[in-house]
Length: 148
Image 1 (cartoon, rainbow, N blue to C red):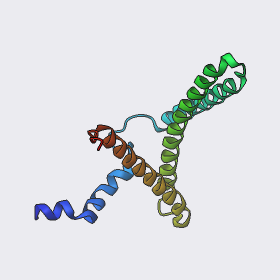
Image 2: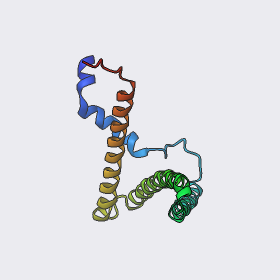
Image 3: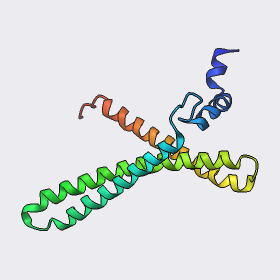
């Protein structure tokens, strides 16, 4: 096979990569108990949501002039906790959609289409975010241009 054709044949690369993307972290070597992992993720998500709400409440309760910096810190903490909650929720959603797809298999093609389309959008979001992060990283590593 021509080396250049291999590098430019995007369709073939996608076909080869698709089975590996769909497997995700649930590879044959994955030895963790699936149910336990989901319970731990859900418990962690619940704790993060409580933290978001507590920090947000403290943010709004800090009213005096001397508390502006404290209120701002509570808001920063709340936002950070929300990021953690979002990360956990996204992982739980992806695992759940994969479970639904595997459960339905060919038994209910019409119903299976919905979680497959949702999972496809989730993957698209992950790809877009990875591209944005790569762009930001490249911009941070770029040498500053001389001012003219």
